[in-house]
Length: 408
Image 1 (cartoon, rainbow, N blue to C red):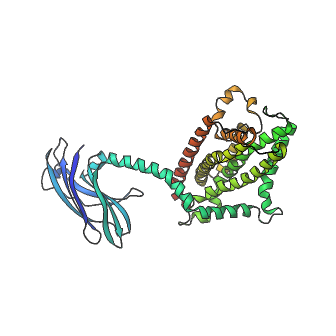
Image 2: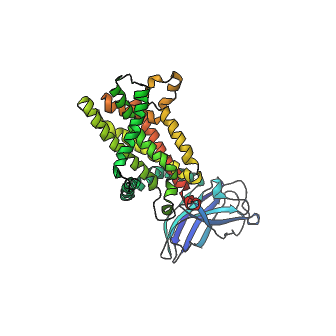
Image 3: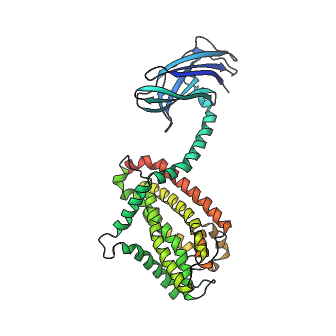
């Protein structure tokens, strides 16, 4: 440590002026000489962006400060006139060499607020750069988990309105209207069923009948419908809503969430049709259907994280939409949805179980057809992956969102 700060005193002195008094002791092995550029100064930062706003004038000591000696310094400075929060670092420094707080020396940290052209001191303390970095990491972790949840809760009415408008708007003016929300996934599933179940005669060992293949295939398609629909549209969602992006007050982070919710609407219709089919084929619906929320929650978190990531990246990489379509097709055929897992080589089974979609497909089949809960060993890993993707996806989107208006 180069310097030690003790006995700080800080107060607001009318208007925007702050008075700060602190004793600074030289705990290094070298003398601090004013002739060599030693002084006391202050930096004023924006605490949100951590941008340096003011590099204040220096207070030069009246003489040399030898190792072990201390000196009390008085500073008077004004906070910026703009209302808001400010963070002040009062620290020893050596001109054209360094600020001591950047080298983990103790310094005086002041948090102030400007309201109605008057300054107010919220708190002050002696700390170090290392301590601030630890606090910053903890604050980032806390915000990484709380910000996306707060955004969803704060804008839930807007998300509901946008999803309803999106679902109805996609089919407005067509002959079938909103019925296409049911018809589209139904036609897609029937097409795959015809190719794999009728033409290729693929069968699942749990139920080798044609109706058994249909049910196992459709159960695997349910989570895929929601994830693929949202992820497929995510790269272009910011471009499609460029008017909203350019509005500073619009919460653009809700646009990828709208896709996630719209995909769930398609899945909801699919689940209703599937349950009706199970009821017709078996005469009853298994009680294990109650486990569905345990799969839906990580599915929603995972899809939202993927959509946030793709939506932000799509603003900068315009070809992402085309590449993304290919990757989704590859992802679909690498997931045993329309064929049994037993048909895969042993080498593939060493890697494919790490596929989150495979865990969802297995879980849906377990609760909808096999009458038991999803395997816990893979379920907790799915929850962990979903939370990590959700948090990192939002952090990625939040970091890049300031550049969206310029790029669009």
